[in-house]
Amino acid sequence: MGRQISIFVENKPGKVNRITGILEKEKINLKAMTIADSGTFGIIKLMTDDNKRAFNALREKKLLVSLQDVVVAEIPDKVGAFHRIAKILENAKINIEDAYGFIVKEGEKAALILKVPDTSAVENILKKKGYKIIDNF
Image (cartoon, one colour):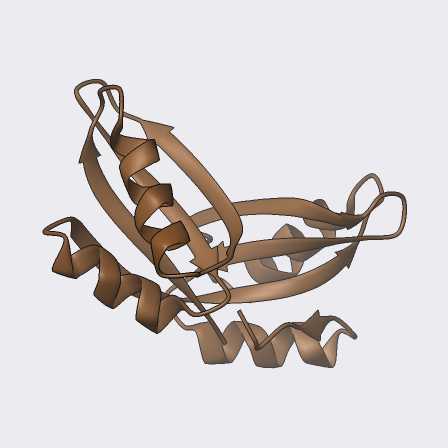
């Protein structure tokens, strides 16, 4: 199971710099990041090489931060790869609450990060379908 850090921030210049600066100062490597805009405020979601330490460092700096369980699955970097997982989860009546991904090796593999109601159940379902779950995130 992976862990994702979500940070609720005001949508103005310098917020991303502040967060990445805290991580750099703590020598924490940023592995994945997404920013969602919702007008005046936004949510920054990230994963690092040490999510617990990153969470604590960001919280110490008075940022509004939470730590959530997520599923990190390795998928092929091919057309329809996410669709196949979406169909598997739909058939299991599991809602995908949030998702993002990134290419690990172009043309070969990608990582898909899923926020779902029951991470253990989704990991088991995907493993049974032959997907590799990345636990060290």
